[in-house]
Length: 241
Image 1 (spheres, rainbow, N blue to C red):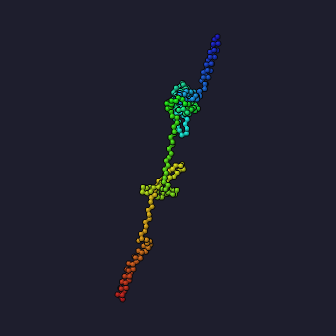
Image 2: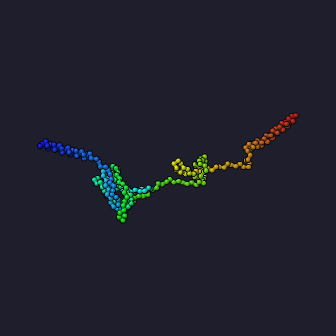
């Protein structure tokens, strides 16, 4: 009798051990979201999921067209035991919605797109805007220059560019495009050329002719003195003669 009791005890221990081991090796439930049966305007919809790590975030995101941004609605689900909740549909009828759930480890499960069905005639519950036009990206301003004030040559001459006081000169504008397609406007001025001095009628003679004239006029006093010396020498010789 004692032997039978020991046998039953050993058998029960083995069964409990196998049961505990099988529960320990039970695979983890994959994180997933059941597709809702449908969305109805101004009605609550039950959302059911499985797996994952709480807390969760439920998102209702409308599908928008090109050039529009979606305004999604996010709900926090802080409970750790429940795997379902009810959400009110504040979007208008015919709005395509995608519901998704995200757990605390940033794992996400998503259900297929569902179009909101029409409900009550009273649409006062519709407080959520589905889509809005995206703000256009401002483009870089492009200045347009007067083509009549642009120089005809392609290059920018730099031999007479004004750097100290360009206010007294006439400015010119030129546009150029770099390799990236950006347009640049360049404003520059030139120093006005100083006209060459014109010769007067009295200065028409060349320096050479002027120097020759000076030489010729200087020869008259020398010849006069020489003549006087010769005459005085002749006079002395005649006196002694």
